[in-house]
Amino acid sequence: MRHLRGLAVLAATIAMSSVALAASGPFGIATPDSPVGNGVSGPAAPLYLAAIRLQTLFYQKLTSALDAFSGDPHAGLWLVTLSFLYGIFHAIGPGHGKAVISSFVLATGERLRQAAVMSVLASALQAFSAIAIVLVAATVFDATASQITVLTDRLELGSYALITLLGVTLLAAKARVFMRHWGGRRPAGSFACEPVMPDGANPAGVRWPGLHRHDATCGCLAASRLAMDGPATSRREKLQAIVSVGLRPCSGALIVLVFALARHLALAGMISVLAMAAGTALTVSFVAALSVMARGLLARFVLSGAGGKHRFAASLEFAGACAVFLFGVTMLTGLLVADGVM
Amino acid sequence: MIRKTGISAFGMASFLALALPAMAHPHVFADGHVVLDIDDARELTAVRNEWTFDKPFSSFAVMGLDRNHDGKLEPSELKPLAETSMKSLADYHFFTWVTRNGAEVELSAPRDYTYRFAGGRLTLRFSMPLKTPAPVGDDLKVEVFDPEYFVAYTFPEQGAITLAGGASGCRATYIPPKPLDDQIMATLAAIPAEQHDLPPALEDAAVGLANIFTAKCS
Image (cartoon, rainbow over the protein chains, first blue to last red):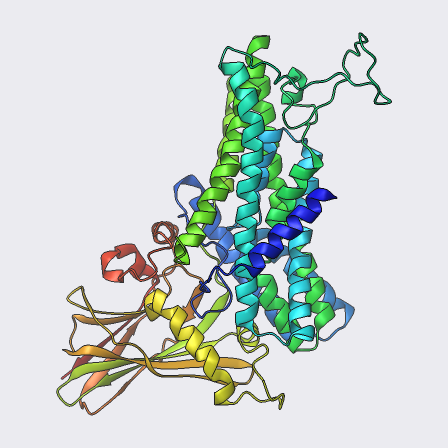
């Protein structure tokens, strides 16, 4: 639980920091989802454009459905369907942790199921974050949209700071493994695979083949782990990745919730946001699954000799760790530059 | 072997492509109206914008603003929001560009900015005088749009623009944006987000999304 407390302290520090953040949306409320607007180009462009059109269509349909909400079961089902579809296409756009989770699973070699679980948890956290912020802001503080926007902008900053920290942690671990396989020299004492016994005891001289502890710094990489075996990531890192993605609610969810509250449809609004999160989770899981499969396919087929496997895995993990770190640093500096802090 | 290469190459490519962040999704929908002030000398003196926002964004914007809880939003209650919006819109060039022969015509800081709330929708009105009045003609263009597409503007085919001021014999024309085709959108989105105040004249592709207004006097 120590890590949870650490995260809470970090989040609180950022939320209360004296960093003057200018709200970056054009009307000073509701910040666009991508502060560093990387362009849509190349072969993926038509996919994005179709996604933008569809998410716009479903957003307008779902908000009209909420506007005309009658409360009968059919209306509810219709709202859930529209929200779910909106979530799917909305998540193809910026944010929602596709880059973070895909790079993370590349760096750590998570299995398909784990990647999906992380995506679902991150999306769910994002929905709960939106619901908690709007409910507390509206009912307890009678807050304005500007105040909510300042809060979510700070959460965004915190989210990028967390991603950067996660990148540093992963890099520190993976760089060591990487150096071991490519540097030719094994640094003394860095081989952190201690044999462990099932009950935790480790009598001198007893070797337990196949039983050793894996942690973030463990350089003892089984070749089988490349494609089919599970990873040895700590729960803390996974939790950090999930929290960094789910911390900041997206503008669409906030707007829909406030709109629903204003129309005395709090429950319908919350259900809509949860259905959106289900759609988002599907898209993010899909992207994370592609990452897992790409890793698996590459591992299976690029490699011949046994020695290459370790090097390949070490390189891939190092690349994934670099991606997480660079993503965090880019988004963080982009946000700080946009806010005139840097 | 070749098939396998293909599969993994595809897998990798789709992963990389999908993992990239994209342009903003529209979360604000505004019905626009433009008023051009043209004086006796047939010069454009000011551009007035009227944007009526969609219901969801409007209710988000007015959240917590009914300070006296009378169920109505008085101008005084909406004043702080107008100040905030004007301050923020400055970073976005107020989504309004005036060009003459392709060169940017400078606008002064907005005046008379107000929000009104009616029928669940907010309307923002503001006026931006030209620093130097510009003669009306084919080469004088007013463009209103959000190049980043966070705000989706819609103008009616008829009645998108009205002329005001002392000029007689002047007529206005509204040229709607081209339908968003893939190429325009892709080029558009390649504009870095830090360049909020990019003059459209510098970026041909951006014109594809622009609502263009011109006036002619005979």
